Image 1 (tube, one colour):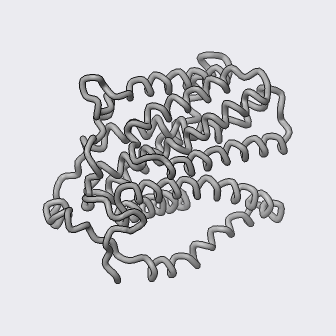
Image 2 (cartoon, one colour):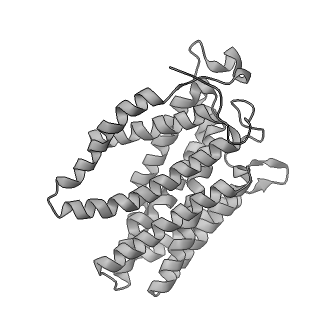
Image 3 (cartoon, rainbow, N blue to C red):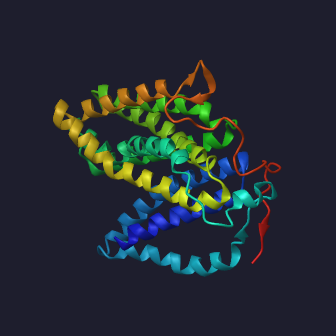
Length: 310
């Protein structure tokens, strides 16, 4: 449990620092790189952990010792962030003020659902393969690795796209839903893998899209708490993912049908998130901001926000 608490704190702190150091498209790219690195490292450490596990179940936990080497380096190298001049004292938060819960409610609810979508393939792929008669560990590992690589590809694509995550979100959700439908209809390995790849490319786009939208709603003074709230929503969705699919499997009779139903729900949400004709700059269910990044003007491309040295 202590490891889980530490991981949540690390994720919150890293994301908050990215939000504090950078703005605009530069921030979006770093958040996408964070997702890409997390997906790539998960694949690497699964393999490395499996190799170390041959020496005993305690051996893989030795990898956490790397943190003891990184902690003093980061404490010395990372500068203290400060708000941009455009934030002004009223936005920096020199005095206690209520946290803007309403501003974050919609995106956090969407993030819970997004986390269910994000974790479905990593959590359930081995069971879907087993239902199709594929139980060889090597095949299961290879298919999972391909899906993980597709997530990395999606994150890389995100860094190359224009700065319009709000308009992109319905398409990303639709692509995720289409992948789930292919997986739910699969009667063989090729179609299942194709659906997983389509879905994971979309989830590689989905996670940084949700994160950048959450960041755009937070002022400097609220960013730490807001990022913690978003992270909590994401981990809540991770916890709920197997429970949702298990419930769907019990109701429909098999896991593939449950995944297909999740695909239909994702497509429905994509339709709801399409811009309203009455308000083209707004997504219907979550009222995302239509203006520029809240904390201030975007710096020159490739340059971080001004920071204070220790």
